[in-house]
Image (cartoon, rainbow over all chains, first blue to last red; front, side, top):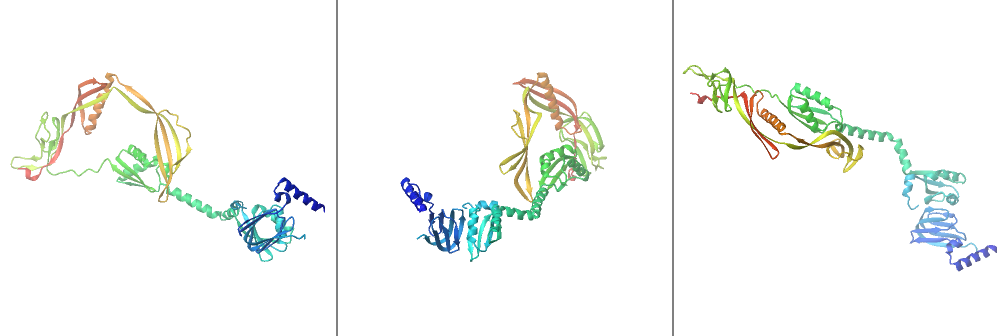
Length: 96
Length: 397
């Protein structure tokens, strides 16, 4: 309950103060260049990686990227640059 | 990273990781700030990536805490290249030494060829060359240039008139003209002696033939002096007339000498500069700073380095700056006349053959005009005026 309260206050604050949401709320920021690159900031680590699938842990839920011939060009604690042919980007929310 | 080429300098390793929990392992790496890139999946249980050389130590450390096995596939970059180079340094040193040796040998003197000199003169020239420092095995850019070798040998060896020095590759070719050319075989055919100049005969020394003139006779050029026809009339026979007829001849010499003249003389101070010139760029080696003389003459001495048969665009430049001074020389009238007389004497001596002597001299007149001395002088000279002319058979009766 307390966590939810905190979230709500944060959300309300960012709305009122017009702060960038990705910074305030630890949301992922995803940049894509066509189907070639996907650049994800604010992830929380790798869960699964193969040449067809990349599964990333986010602060809330997971991000699933599907495609072909995946290569992680760079991986840093909070950033990842993936190359290949990207077909799907899916958000998975475990808290229903 | 974006500028991956920088890793080429620091070196990087391609690593293969196999085992369980590969993702966990990668997460662990990223969390401990180890940079990895080009992560690729190979099947279910293997992953390859590249990692910079500096992080290898940390990678091992992380691997120890996981269930993964690491394996190094390829080593790329400068540090590994250097290591390989060091391992094969023998080749490198060999190659370098080879180039240096070929370079040195290309700039060495390998031969000195002397043409046109008899053995005695050749020996003398070789001795002189040794003294100058031109020897087999010397480096060409350490010895004098051909012109000064030429000058020094001409000055040092008295028995040669002229010597040409030419460098062809690694060989010095010396072309010698000797003073004492082998004498032409004397003509012993019938000949007369004729006068070459207008003269009064002073002394006669006839070896063979019939003298036609006597002492104190005045002769004209071309006049018969000693006849090659001897014997009584009717029984004449031709001989080769030989002898020396000394006649008094006259010469006139005119000299003009300014009373005041300006000279440039060197006062002996000099500075030297050495450069290596590569293309148009000069790199000073020795002798820095500006030349401190207000007035100087510059002598440039350039030598090109050679490599095998090619000439390299590299020169060794040796500049000599000699300080010069302006000197004004002023003669008094008496001095000027004396100097002019001396000049006239020298003039005449140059004209005369070696066996001639100056018997007397007179100053015909001298005047000083526009700051110059005009002097004309008359010389009486005793010299051999006889010259042999062959008698052509049909001419004699």
